[in-house]
Length: 178
Image (cartoon, rainbow, N blue to C red):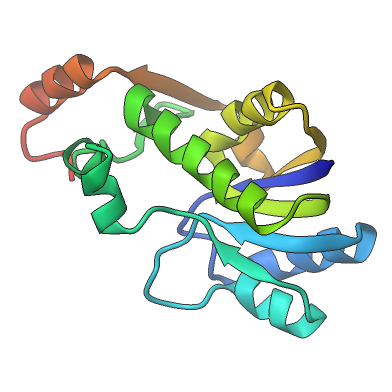
């Protein structure tokens, strides 16, 4: 059976030296069999470097552009709103359809790579809680859910947008989405 440690972070922090103590602490505390990471495809990450140091496999789990096109989520993903600050709160947008597809893809990719043991899965913090639910529904276990920086576990509002709501958001905020 697979057992997961979920590390939710901001992609802005993912390749900084600040995340290294968290990665070291997790890999020192747990017998990690695989590090799986949602990460841009064009460079090695801090987690990749940690896996090399530990002599354990690393798996980049995010979809390639052609895979996003194949399953029909490329356009929706390219229009994802950026995070917004509203007073003290950080507002993050979840794309209900395409993020579901991506998260299922990530778990399928992990399951195709390893059938048992502990996996450190690193992803955008707004995916973490949803992955915990998906993992449990698949009959697997989550030992710990960690956020880096820790503030990402509180004071963050996650708003889900359907494809129609994303269209409306983009109309209302023309020029402010990517």
